[in-house]
Image (cartoon, rainbow, N blue to C red):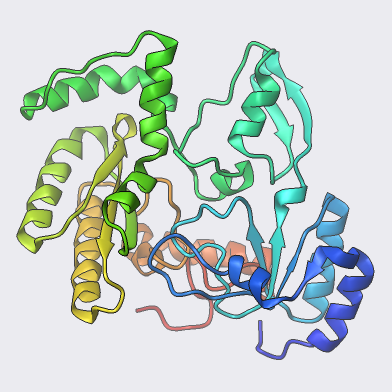
Length: 334
C-alpha cells in the first residue's frame, strides 16, 4: 500500500455503484473513526454501506485498483482501535448486511451475513430450540465477534465449579447460583451495563479499557498480582470477567489531558499484558489486537508472527485490508 490514493477517480466510481450509500461528510466519517476507549480519533476518507457480498467484492476490487485502504465496521463496539483509519481509506459499514441465510438447528450451526448482531440472531432462533450462547457483553456484530475471537461466560459453564473453588481458596465469598429466569436476566443486565455504570460513576472522565486471558490454573495468582499492582499505582480499575475461561477486563478512568497519568496507565497495561504472557496466557482475551496490542505480538507469538505476515501478503499483496492492525508489514517493529 502506498499513500498515492487516486480518490478523484475512485469516488465517482463508488458513487455510481452505491448511490447515496457512499458518504463523505465530516460527521459520518468522524462517527466511524472514534472508539469508546483511549485512542485518538482516526476517521476514514469515506464510508460505504454494502448490501450484498457481490457489492463488497466490487468495492474491494475498485479500492485495490486505486490503492485505497478498506476498513470493516460492524456495530462500533471495538475497543483496541480495530476500525480506526491510520492511513485513511474507505470504511465498509456492514449494518445493512443483516440476512440470516440458513439455520441448521440439528447441526447447531447457521450462516449469516457479517452485520447480524448476536441479539438479532437469538431473536431469529427463539422458536427453533437453539440459541447462540456467546455473549461478550456488548450487542456486537457476529462479523466483529469472529474478528476478535469474542468469548463469554455462557460458553464455559462447565468450568464454573472450578472457578468457584478457586475463589473460595482465595478467600472469596460463596457462589450464589441464579435459577429463576428473572434472576438470571437481572444478573445479565448488570453485566451488560458494566461499562455504562463505570462511566456514570466517574462523570467527565475518559476510559482506558483492556483485557487479558490466562489459563484457569493461573487466574487466581494473576488477579492477585494485578490487584496489588492497581493498589501500588493508586489506580481506579473496576474489573469484570469471563473468569470461566480465564478472561478478565479492566476499565480505568483517567484524564486524557494529564500526560503523567497516561504514562502511568500505559506502564500498567504493559505490566498486565506481560504478566498474562508469563503465565502462558494471551495479550487479549476477546477485545482483539487492533492497534492497541500489536506491539506485544512478537513477544506472544515469536517466529509464528512471520508466518502470519506471509499469509497476509499472500491474501492482501498491496496491504489495503485494514492496514496497520495486528502487525505492520513495512515498519520496523518496536
